[in-house]
Image 1 (cartoon, helix red, strand yellow):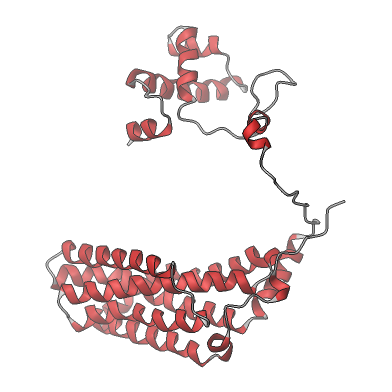
Image 2 (spheres, one colour):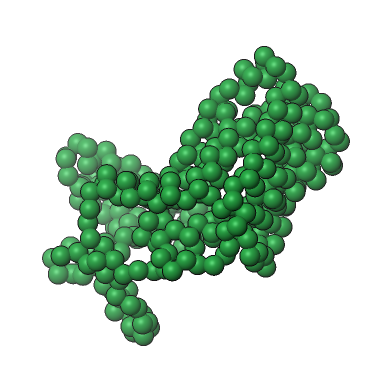
Amino acid sequence: MRSRRWHSASQVRVKRSAQELVLEMRQATADLAQQLQRTPTDEELARHMKVTVEDVGAARSADLGFSAWSLDAPLSDEAEGGSLGELIGSDPLLATLDLAAVPRPSRQRFVTDLREGWDEFRSRTWLWTITAVSAVFNFLFAAYIVLGPVVSQRSYGGAAAWATVATVGGIGSVAGGLLCMRLRPRHPLRWAVSVSCSLALPPMAFAAGLPVPAIAAAAALAGTGIIVFYSLFTTTLQRQVPEQALSRVSSYDWFASLAVFPVGLAVAGPAAAALGVHTVLWGTGLIELAAILSLLLVPSIRQLTNEVPGDTRSQTPPSAP
């Protein structure tokens, strides 16, 4: 693992002895900084490591092939030595780029940001209903994640069955991504909800005791469905929500959707012990399907088009004083 990271971090291949020296230098730097309450000099590092100052310098040079630099990193210890970002910015090729100035938004209180984001979130029925159903789905999906391997072990001979289902599901996800590259439905949410019904198939396939190829096929359909759903939902979110509020609205959506997932993981085992593994899997799939289909009862989900409202186009925020 360590060698692979080194070799991919730089086009310069670092010798193994240099790698070990760098690791020792890092540890020595941390130890001496704690003792001295300051950054140690190369001489102090050399004495501590029992090497020469030249060895420490070589280790520092080798470390550059592994460490990421901030654009604000100084190029030297001099006060006016400039930064890495200034050096890159002086490149004549970069000077040819036509970059529009981006004004800084005016600052406001964190609570105000939260309130404005919440107002945008709750004002869109299609958004909060999908978020609510996503929370239900993720709570139930956790049970499938826990109990799917259990059924694979008990009824299908072990981990190979679960690995097959997961792998084919991943292939279905790739297929869903390729499909989304060409998919441009006029009513994106209607499509997104319809295809996401496939997400209920894998737990019901396990519950029904279908053969592994059939369960894998169900997982492939579910993988395609989840990617199509998220692609259409995310692009709809970006079209319908004003740009300046998009990150806050998206945060509410992600938090509410995923907050219950750990709870689902925690209760899946006790529920299966009390009701039976297959009963919980049947319940998982059927409730998921009912919850997803209920979204089609929401008029704004059925009727929303892929047109961009005028009030969501990029607007220039007021400049900070």
